[in-house]
Length: 155
Image 1 (cartoon, rainbow, N blue to C red):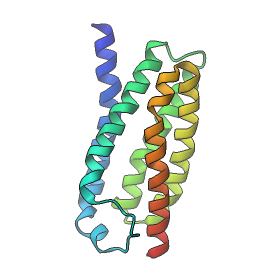
Image 2 (cartoon, rainbow, N blue to C red):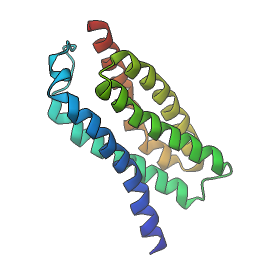
Image 3 (spheres, rainbow, N blue to C red):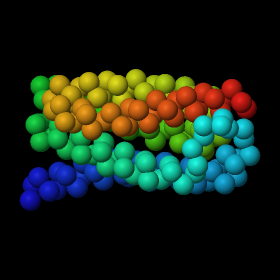
């Protein structure tokens, strides 16, 4: 029962972060975002919700695996890096969509990417599977960084 609780909490945390970010996204996606210039490789809007939901579940599963190993030898470092990547993940929606600023979004996503890389490495050292589960997140945010940069350049 204790492990089930940890699993649920682990998955809920990133899903809640995504849910909070969606408030900022929803407020601009059909208005401001629809009017700005986007590159030809911009994905269709319907793809973002299922991709992010899947990624948040993978992030949660990854955290759960690390939690089950008691966060390894550097508990504080693990929790700080994990929390920071979630914070910068949320902050991106606030900056890009909430403040309608591709520049601030770009600055944030570069920081986010560095935290995801650090998080992946730290988790991998504790649980190889946990590290592997973060690779789709790392790849998607890498793509999102290129997309964000392109939108910044075009606008």
